[in-house]
Image 1 (cartoon, rainbow, N blue to C red):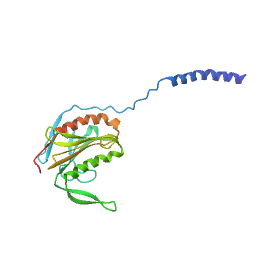
Image 2 (image 1 turned 120 degrees about the vertical axis):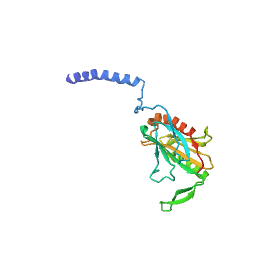
Image 3 (image 1 turned 45 degrees about the horizontal axis):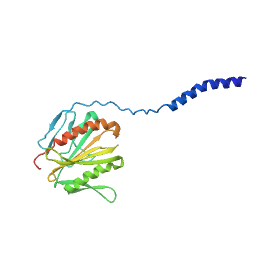
Image 4 (image 1 turned 45 degrees about the vertical axis):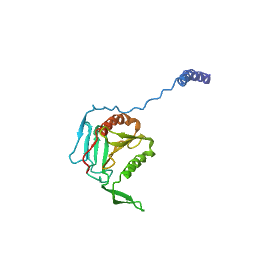
Length: 223
């Protein structure tokens, strides 16, 4: 009798639980959206970078800072015209590396034993363009798309803008040139682990700043 009583009790409590499970199974599934920190975006306003010793000028945001590039990925810059446009609020920066077409340059040449040796060379225009595409395509391992588009600014400067999809270290890169004297390459990096979803609001915001920088870019007298 005790066994029958316990079985009845078990059935009494299990039936509502079973009904709840069945109702839950028949309810539509709603996925939970992944949350990210809310990012405060500053007002847009620009100032001019026009150092007398530099072969170029452009406008950059007030929420950014120009920093002289003393090291470039643990190596010395090729010339004193390499700078960073820092965005402290977003832990990001645009690396700007300038080269004079036909000028002397120090290249790293890989040796048979795997080490690298410095070699003095000449900045050839075609080689610099190919290097810009090669550096962008290094993101192929983590990117899901790479789109490039030709640019021609109001100031008569031409170049190419690269948009790299996926969790690439740098999703936005470009180069500008007059094809005879001046060549500059830019790349946006963040001091965080790349995540296309969480960085998208900042990437979209800084895209407009990069567009303004590029459209306001001017070459000075060839050096």
